[in-house]
Image: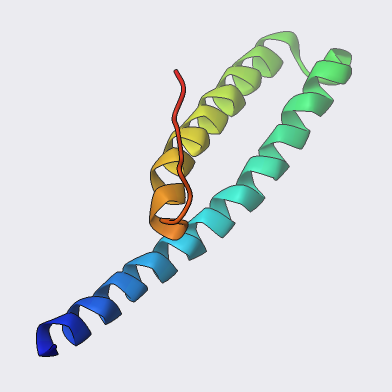
Length: 86
C-alpha cells in the first residue's frame, strides 16, 4: 500500500505537467495556424522570399506541435483509446 501511495502522486504530477504542456501547445497551435492561413490568404502582404521562408517555418512548427501532442494525449487521457495514423 505504501508503494502505491508514492507512485500515485508521481503519476498525478506527470499527468498535470503533460496537461499544462498540452494547453500551451494548443494555444500556440491556434496562433500559428491563424498566421499560416493569413499568409495563404494574402501573400502580397509578405515579401516573396521572406513569406516563403516564414511559411515553411510555420508549417514545420505546426508539425512539431502535432507530434508532441500525439505523445501527450495518452498521458493526459489514459482512458482514451488513441490511435496514431501515419
